[in-house]
Amino acid sequence: MTSKRTLKMRMKKIISALAETYPEVVCPLDFDDPWECTVSTILSAQCTDKKVNEVTPGLFKKYPTVESFAGAKVVQVEKAIHSIGLYKAKAKNIVGAAKMVLEKYEGKVPDEIDELVKLPGVGRKTANCVVLNAYGKPGIMCDTHCCRVTRRIGLHDSDDPVKIEYALGELMPREEWGAFSHRVIIHGRQVCHARKPNCDVCSIRRWCETGGMKAIDLPGLPEPAKG
Image 1: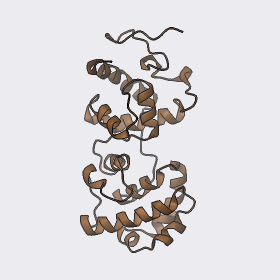
Image 2 (image 1 turned 90 degrees about the vertical axis):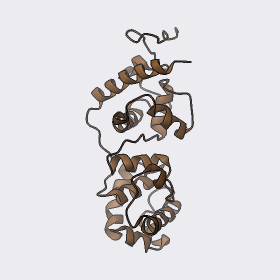
Image 3 (image 1 turned 45 degrees about the vertical axis):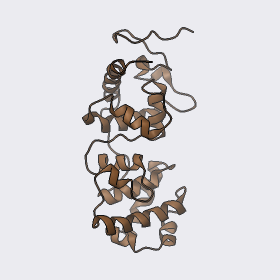
Image 4 (image 1 turned 60 degrees about the vertical axis):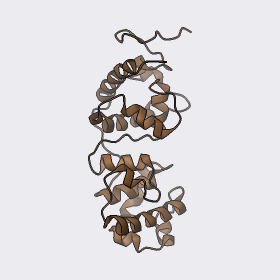
């Protein structure tokens, strides 16, 4: 098993390479406040960010506040988001989350992950997205891309997003969490695809156990397998 020290050294190199490849990173979802960020992130589950951004302008125009969402009938919200996958469950969760934000948090979306995950439809990935992108606090967004890429390159051996979040968090400074999350997700979408990763153009292949890691200047790393 690779030592934690070696993994941290590898992570440092990966962070630097990803930063050079994707220098400017921002949240791809459009929102104006923490509540809109929460709604957009709930909608983004198993849906493209592009599609969410097409739907939310009309949705937020119809329901401009937490109060308006809390007072809406679920079926009305369903109609407003019907073009998004799993719209029935998402509509129910959004209305439920709005009610809880009003009743439990005085209308303000919590800025702590342990509180956010109490909201209907909000798991740790969504909670991390909100604290990172709406509040500017450290967060690691372990979506399918992040989980796949970081396992493939050998930073962990888990399939559990929560375990992966904690494992990655131990390998880098907190101030790197957010940018790394955004960059590794972009990398997963553009290069390190699930079925056929494009290793020939991968900027972090040198430190990837699957794609052909080379241990030129990383003492302690094993040589890549032959053949």
